[in-house]
Amino acid sequence: MKTTIDIPLPLLKKAKKYSEEHHITLKALVEVAISQVLSGKANNQKFQLEDKSVSGHGLQSDFDWNDWASIREASYEGRGGHK
Image 1 (cartoon, rainbow, N blue to C red):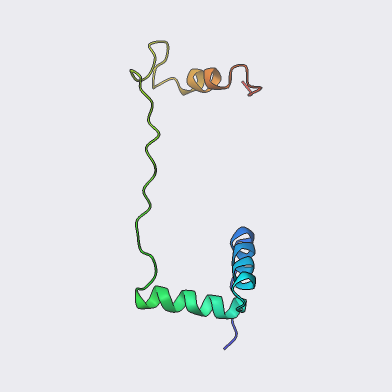
Image 2: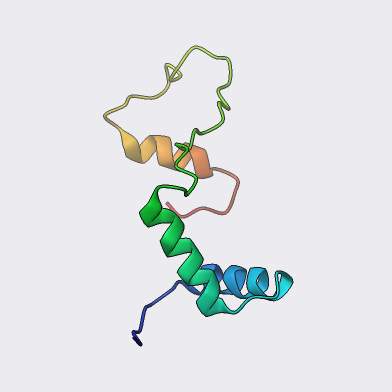
């Protein structure tokens, strides 16, 4: 059966590259991917963001959480940001 699906261009490019490298059609790749998801064989690992915390003492005393405009202005200061 034929159907039409919208795939974001970056994902489509990756899929086409993968299918070329593995000598399979894009159709076959989509079929395998759907079959794996439906059978529970797909990689269902949860994504965990790498901890990139920095040491410090929280928000500087010059700033107030209720004054987002001054925080934004200071973060772009000297970097060409808009006021």
